[in-house]
Image 1 (cartoon, rainbow, N blue to C red):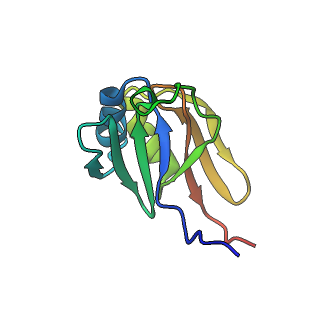
Image 2 (cartoon, rainbow, N blue to C red):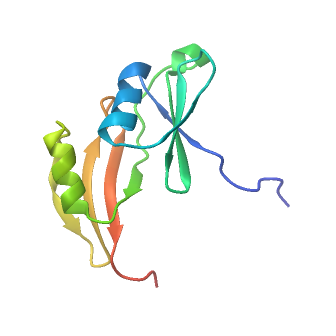
Length: 124
């Protein structure tokens, strides 16, 4: 038995809270939800997932880049990639076609891995 009923948010660590807020809010265009009072933590909404960018040293943690990739759902990977490249985002490799989805891999300013993702075939 578990008392866990869901996931409220995923926290992404940053060395520079203000730069992360600019990247996730302005460059990626995610809707702002709230700031954690006067602490360096800010939440954005990505569809049904809340992403929080937080500067860990303010919360007693040491910064380390994540190795967990966040897949950001988009309608058109190529078009979104082009827009982000024009905003200075550097992608790693070509768009991947896995046979069920398209993906384009990149990272935030702190090196946390992200991908644009569009599933074009049903889950089996």
